[in-house]
Image (cartoon, rainbow, N blue to C red; front, top):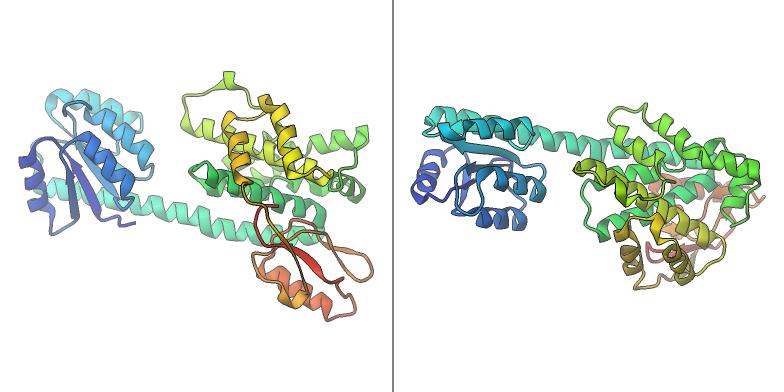
Length: 380
């Protein structure tokens, strides 16, 4: 994305021409003569860092347009050009967070350039923060989960399956901020590290838990939330983890987009967690989907249909030896040492570190039982 590319929206062609002439040495300028045309450009070319809109336009005014622009391109920096009579409206829009800056007409060129430069810098900071969260933090979390997976293979094999299903659902539903869903899914089982190995064995083989074991298991989302909320900037992820066993309540619909997204992500975790239990209990994919449908009131209404759409093509299984393992493969059975110790849980997605570790085990006295069953598709 080019942060230096700016879209001007105004129904006055003379103003658009003037902006292009004044600013062409400083920025890459594109124009739209109507709000509808502006939205079309934003939706089809996600390459703008800043959008500048006139306040008074036929059909859709500047506040309405920039509000829609925020939905189409959430990270774009929004600026409004106003006359004196529109100032109060613009100030209210700024206070609601819909607009980053507003400028009075006519606007001197030096002020316009300075404001747009600040907007470009703001967009750069937004993208830098997103890259930090989505890539740097995600990479650190992946390393942490790899380490934890060695300590509790069953719990983190389950977490790996949940992560893969949750991301596929999120992509199927074209959801924003998927890095938050990814991290929530990766850490969804972290509270299970306190469970006895015998309880995790039951969970991952569809064996009913005792009343005491079930009570401890039901508390793991809250325990996971407490752990993750200690990590800076993961408060949203922590809340999603804490709500993963909650039924979706349509009566709690919020006007806050972020809150609704978090509720949807929690519902996705609930659905994929239940689905994984059914599969571990011996159910086929079709039977597991049918059981989800019987309790459809538990889930967000979009989730079940998207779940069904994901399984239009069935995966296939392949047997490979340790030397054939590659990053991104998914093991479709528990992987044991020659002495019977569990090394990796079913559903674990292999990383370079895990592949190297299994090869090291295979060439040592520990040994690895082979062949290993892997899935040729990410859907299991």
